[in-house]
Amino acid sequence: MQLDSDGRTPSGASAPGAAGGTEAAVEARELTKRYGELEAVSHVSFSVRTGEVFGFLGPNGAGKTTTIKMLCTLARPTSGEATVAGLDVASRPKAVRRRIGLVFQEQTLDQQLTAEENLRFHAVLYRVPREQVASRIRRALDLVDLAERGRDLVSTFSGGMARRLEIARALLHTPEVLFLDEATLGLDPQTRALVWKDVLRLRDEEGVTVFLTTHYMDEAEYADRIAIIDHGRIVALDTSDNLKAAVGADTVALGTADDEVALAALQAAGFAAKPTAEGMIVLVEDGESAVASLIAAATVPVRHVRVHRPTLDDVFLHFTGREIRDEPGEARSGMQLAWTARRR
Image (tube, rainbow, N blue to C red; front, side):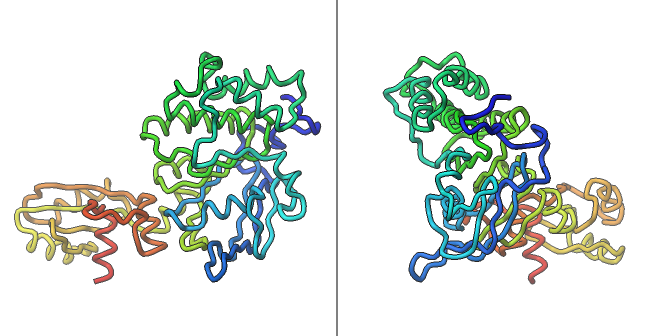
């Protein structure tokens, strides 16, 4: 592993790929940002372990980008404290910037330069030692599978390739923490998956701590831990599995030959069954294992069964009372029906 221009290891991690190191790579304590009367971020506290992929999940306007701006020294906190790589973001902004990589929502590459030229220009800005520039460019391009396109103009790249090049650029000066602010916004699901393959490789091979913001549920699943932020406040923080477990039981949706009779029979058998427009839902601990018992207890022929395990959509609904995307006509999941039924 190479040393950077300050004599540091690239990540500062004790073991590359070991998510959950003991050191805090990023820490916020009561971090707050106000713009006049608007409190964009309100008393946010969290700690990101070295080598961890940490996700900030929330809708547009929740305070994700504002938080990243404060952590990356692009906005000064109104109150509270934050450290990145052990350095205070307010009192030592230049030192923090040397130790982070940042990929913005908007593309910032020079379209008229080649991939290598974009990286070389970045190396100059960050004062990468001249004798290390070529090897670092090769390594960065290798990490994002763009080694064969280094001499091609960025204007010939697809959106996904350009985004991967931006990640390579952010790594060129061997940062300890990589910040990804909605970095895959606008990319199709397949391309997002490719980008995340590259990001996880960085964590595993280079020990880079990754701090991401996203409103994509599937993307948040890549994080070791997830903080759900809404209206500038963190409303939940844990692993994906633990957050889902907090939501509660699995949901089994049933449609039968006579829903009224089946509902009464299931309730009489002790199942937590609720009526829905499409039949009924039953809340159980293990949906797949319970299907046979539910069919037997229904006493009438069952026409369809659907098992739904809690997802991050359900987690967000549970902790905020609303869906992350308020799209008209969007199909509601079994768990969302369950929460509606519980409120009635």
